[in-house]
Image (tube, rainbow, N blue to C red; front, side, top):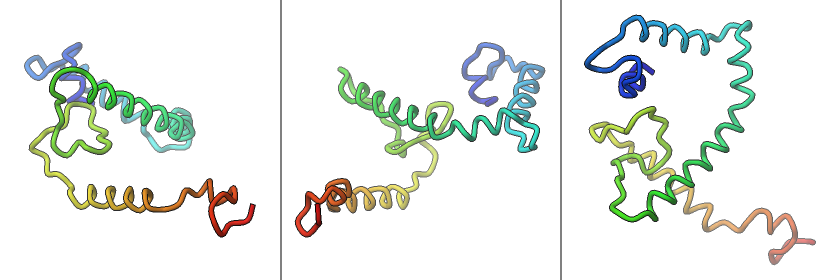
Length: 130
């Protein structure tokens, strides 16, 4: 959060660090994520995560579609071919987890070669009852 706040350059920055603001920001985030039973926010957040994730995924696909179909040369960061939860631009110097990417591709290949489960359940594939 401190890195994101510094890069936003609204209340603090890399060149003009506002220690009081950054300390308050860290305290605020720690309080939001405190796992005590009295933290009502964290419980609400956990219940809403699936909804947030669905809309976040939809937003990511829409942004990728615009990114790749707009004029100009797309700017792709090495290792950001799959979901990246960085708050700022990815750093090209980070190591790329190629094993994870191979696993994702293997899963997609398996899904692409498997008959659709909805058609099987509806009895529209050979050897299934209607």
